[in-house]
Amino acid sequence: MNNKLLEVRGLQVAYGKVTAVAGVDLDVAPGQIVTVIGPNGAGKTTLLSAVMGVLPSRGDIRFCGQAREHAQIEEMVAAGMGLVPEKRELFAEMSVEDNLVLGGFHRYRRGERDQSESLREVYDLFPRLKERRAQLSGTLSGGERQMLAVGRALMARPRLLMLDEPSLGLAPRIVREVLRIVSELRKRGVSILLVEQNARAALQVADYAYVLETGAVTLEGPAAELARDPRVIEVYLGMGGH
Image 1 (cartoon, rainbow, N blue to C red):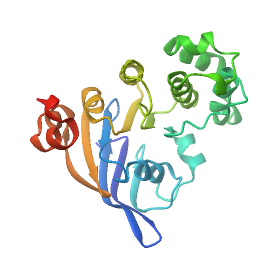
Image 2: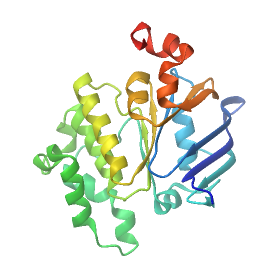
Image 3: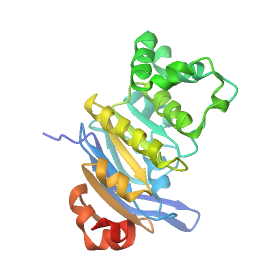
């Protein structure tokens, strides 16, 4: 029996003649946190965008046991996949709660009327958002905006949540809080595919890790093993990795 939630085989993405992702294989099992680390420009964001259907790609993508290559974003969301992009892309002139309600629109359109329950769950996870629910999202702090972006994605009740650089631009204290929430989501049955430049933080929270360099996977393995790998320590963790 295949117990993979997401299977990616031979994924290729090109911008014109420039190859951004070159034959990547990647798996996420149910209840797993998988991270992809690597330098700027390695193709991490491109990888997530291709899996989500934002960018055209070649290769095989299976999600929830079904072939999904060439699927549209709407199909992936309906199948149970969510993406929180690096830029967060909130509606600044709308309130926190209206942003959240929009996140559940696909479910509402399908006739599922569980928005109130989903809101309660998000507010339980992010009490700060409940306090700020009437506030315009454009007036939130960076950490609050990141919480709102994650909360909005959770309103669609995803089975797999893909996070693109959730710690970017945040203070260390807020980064710890965001990663604590990532661990909490796993306990609630959401699998996570986490793209991070903060390799130390990502390897601490993940079960399995891939190192992506110039569009290709150069290392992979259990996150705890990669955190001890001399190559990872030298390039991504510095001497503090010891």
